[in-house]
Image 1 (spheres, rainbow, N blue to C red):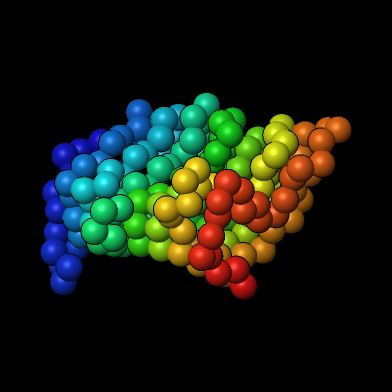
Image 2 (image 1 turned 45 degrees about the vertical axis):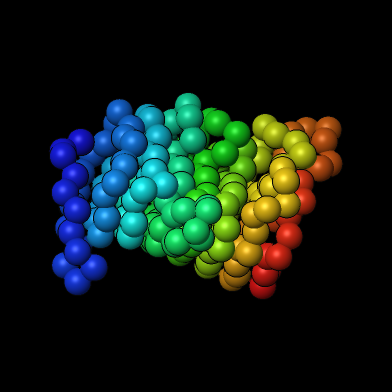
Length: 194
């Protein structure tokens, strides 16, 4: 992966057609757009100090780990990270979660998430959005799980918006019944579902 240079809100830095196979931890960058990237094998982590980092039309696939973890934003001040994934495909992940959206004010929208062993999207943090995604054939080797999973150990996080998602083919581990399309677990509160 090349050295990533930040842009400005009016003139973001755009990286096109990257192939990333060894993962990356992004930290301290802002106003960056990745377009048509092919990301596999190891996860991309967007750290809490990042702002306005977006993946568009990307392929995330073939990993023994999760595929992407967005942690941007400040949980103390509630400053939004405004980082996310748009119009992308996430598939073939053998970990318990395909994509984690945490931090504050981040998003995943218009994505196709399919054919994974565990959760499609795990929400943590505050004020994150999951909009208009298609989630198919997930949770195939798991139980006590959801295609979209919200968990909050101490009740201090929430305010998520989960809207307009299409979820089907969520079957779960044979013999178990605690598998849901959307699962609000562990003190999930103050969230909107439409």
